[in-house]
Every structure is written in structure tokens, then in C-alpha cells.
Image (cartoon, rainbow, N blue to C red; front, side, top):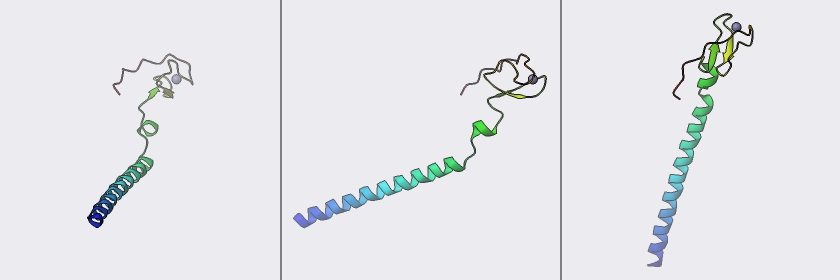
Length: 80
Ligand SMILES: [Zn+2]
């Protein structure tokens, strides 16, 4: 009886360990994909305003061009 209980406990522990290992592998793989994936914010023109006068890229929060100082048109609101 005691041996049977021990066996069940051992099998249960193995199952838990296997699940934990799978979760960890999956998480590490996901983190690796995150590192290799290019950041959409840094790589795209989303989030910048092009100056219609000198074509300088300004932050979307800027209201005036950093190069020529002219007023930038308001970007349409974006649903993130
Ligand atoms: Zn400008």
C-alpha cells in the first residue's frame, strides 16, 4: 500500500516536472522570438509625423517641426 502511494506520488511529481519544463521551454522560445522580432515602433513610420515642408520626421507628439519650426498638421487619432 505504501509503495503504491509512493509510486503515485512519484508519477505525479514527474508529471508536474514535465509540465513545468514544457512551460519553461515554451516561454524561453517566446522570449527568443520577441528578441529576434523587429520592433514595430522602431522600424515603421508609425508614431512619426513627416513635415509637409521639409519632410523631416518629427515625433507624433510634436506640434512643430524640429528642423524648420513650422506647424505640423494634426495626425488622425489612432486606435491602439
Ligand atoms: Zn519641417
